[in-house]
Amino acid sequence: MEVTSHTEGEVVNAVPVIVIQAPAEIDQLVMYMNDQVYYPAKNGSIFSWDSLVMGEGSNFMEFYAPGYLQPVATRTINLTPPPAPVITITSHTEGEVVTALPIALRGTVQNPVGSLTINGMDVKLDGEDFIVPYWDLHEGNNTIEIVAKGPGTHGKETVHSFNLINQSNEAPRQITLSQGGKTYFRHEFTVPAEVRSGNSRVSVYMGDETPSGLEQFPWWGYESISGGRSVFTVEMALINNMSPGVYSFPISMLFKDENDKLKAFESVTVDLTVSDENIVELGTSIDGKELLSIDSTIMNSIDTFEFTPSSLPTGVGVNFTHRSLNSSDSTAEIYFDVYASPDAVPGSYSVPVTMKFLSADSSELYSVVRNIDINVVLPQAGPPTVVIGSHYNGEAVTTPQVTISGTVADFNATVLVNGQFATVEQTNGSEGTFSADITLEDGANQITVEATGEGGLKSRDEITINLSSQSSGGGLVIPAGDTAATSESFQFDPISFYEVRGYQVSVGGSNAAIAPNDFTVTPIQGELSWVVGFDVSVSPSTSPGDYELTVTHIFLDGNGQTILEESRVLKVEVTE
Image (cartoon, rainbow, N blue to C red):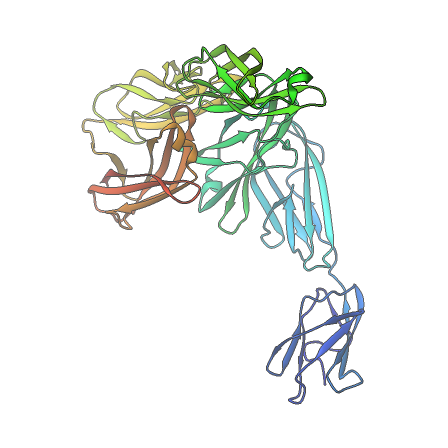
């Protein structure tokens, strides 16, 4: 009987599947190789063995059948893995100084490759070539590690590391959290059109340098806004106690295409300050603790405990959670949380809390009043994301005097409209609105709104307004063959806002000619609202006219249950 899949002494570069077609009288076979026994899969008279453990070099196989004292077949297979991959970087050199971001990483890998990673992230090859067209760097030295591994379990691995020095002077983002606290970290950047083309899958990557006390797989949201801008929102929550101090680490945002090929890698360095003070953002809570010394003579008589705060500011709460008595050192640890509602007034407060220890018959054993110092703050400033809301791109107007207005994520930001200072007013939390009156000229007018916030963070939105003798009117006005971006905002109560974990959408009255697509959802913490952004695409063959679509938005909790379902009419005027 012969091994039908391989010849004697055959050389393979990966662990093979061994196949034998046995005569009719053989209904069982077993293989022995390298002191291991292997049982086959059987399909009629065909026996096959896979998932073999083979060593490099010669591997001798013996095949036995019931009733035979000697092997019914033998075979020697020589495993010789292909040579190790050879990595060549073509876009940059070791120690190169980079002053403009992002960069494009390019290179080649020769010899067979089973997997390729850059700094731990999978990258796809196009033949022997690879490219990541958008790669961000943090300030200072950046080590880029490329790992290529040959195919199969015996594939050889090549590691190629090089260093790039970023001198773009991008300062780390500053975040402050108290124990048990959380905030919503926002980051805005512009993705080139060639990266945004086609279907993109986005994700957030928290690397190995992330402090262990932070949630390692946080909730995050993504919003695509005008001008190719992307806004990522990441919930940063201290779920385990951390020692007070400053922790520096990167947060990365990734774009991949439909084939899982990495297209963009954006990274921002965060300096996280963990504070032992009670700093609580509007709409969040933190953990607090007080340590009390208790007379050892009454420690064993304690039965119940009372925790009574007084003179609470509006919107601020201090709630007892649990206590721990330590008889070894006669101390009591009192744990509580501090909450600030979205409508609380930012400021520093001292809340007296009476703590009483009672015996089984409710007699007071010990009482003390402690002042809990609380600092209520606005949500921490992120990029001052600015969005023009008064007009849409390509809108036609008939009067030269217009008011350009919209929203800005940081009401303390300086907002310029075509170089003119805009009026900015606070709305909710740290967010605000802006407005400025400008005069248009006949024809196309480019409107540029730029906001500069804390730490020099900038945001820009641009549209074109056409001054003409006739106004097109309608809701969205979209020429046939074009796409327009729009958004809808949904208000929630303080509880349901934080319970949102999923989103579904259905469209009625639509057809292939007019199609809403690319839906994104983003929380606006200061307003307790979720914003749904989407594009509306019009087919080139669509006839001019007015169209109406019904878009049903459904927000879900972590169990897939509906929190909010609302249908809204979307009006579209299609022009030539």
